[in-house]
Length: 328
Image (tube, rainbow, N blue to C red):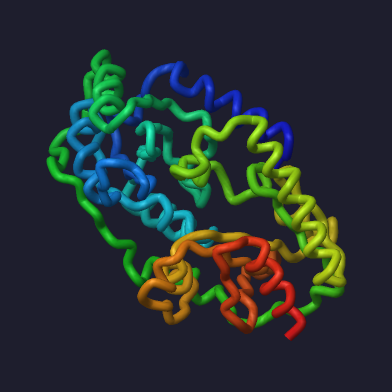
C-alpha cells in the first residue's frame, strides 16, 4: 500500500496501458468473467446489462470465452463480497477478468489474468483499448486478437448474468456484526488511505468515476482526504490510530499493535445493506449511493458495522456518524 509511489505507479501504468504488449495468452484458452461499470450520465442511456449485450459480440470475435457478466459496483461493495465473487470464479475455473468501463466521453476494455484470490486482479497495468463507444473499442480489441488463434470452443453467443448464490455469500454475511468491537482503547486502529496500496486492491480503479484520474488529482485527493480524516478523528476518536500507506501482512500489523482496520465501502444503500446481512431500505433512499464505514478485527476476520446504520452520501458525515456511534 505505498502511498505516493503507488499513485505514481498507477498513473504511469495508466498512460502506458494501451501500448503494453498483447492480450494475455489465457484470453484465447480459458474462461473469462466480465465486470461492467457504466456512467449513468452517458448517452445513449444503457443499463449495464444492455452494455454487456453490446460488448459481448466483440469479445467473442476477439477470441474470448466470456461466461458471465457482473456489475463492477456490485462486486466491490465490500472486501468480503469481493472475496465471495473470487471464490465463485475459482470454482468456475475462470482464468481471465475483462473490465468494461463506460464514461461519458469514452469506453475502455481492459483484460488481465484472474488473480485466484480476493484481489481478483493484481494490478492496474492491464492490457487495454479505448474508443469513443463499444463498437470502436470492441473493433480495436478484435484487431488485437487477430494474430492469435483462439482455442475457446462452444462459446455462448449471448451475454449471461448469473447470480452468486446465497450459499456462496452466507459465510461472509455471518461475519458482519451490528455492534461495536471491544478493546479499541488497547490496540491501534489502522486507517488505509484511498489510492494507496493499503486499499483493498486494484479492481476499484476501473470504476467509471475513478478510471483515468491523473497523478496530480490522485495525490491532491489523498492529501485532502488525510487532512480531513485527521481533523474528524482528533475531534471524535480518543484512541490510537496508525496511517497505512503501504502493504503489510496481518502478522506485521499485529506486531505493530494494529489489530483493527477502518474500512470504507461505497455503493447503493440497499445493495450495501443486503450484502452485510441487513434488511435493505427500499425505494429512493435505497437507490442512493452512500458511504459506509466499519471496523475489521484482523485476528478473527470479524467485521463490526456499529449499533446503528449510519451511512451517508457524504463520506465526512458517514465517518463522523460512525465514530460517534462507537461511543454507544
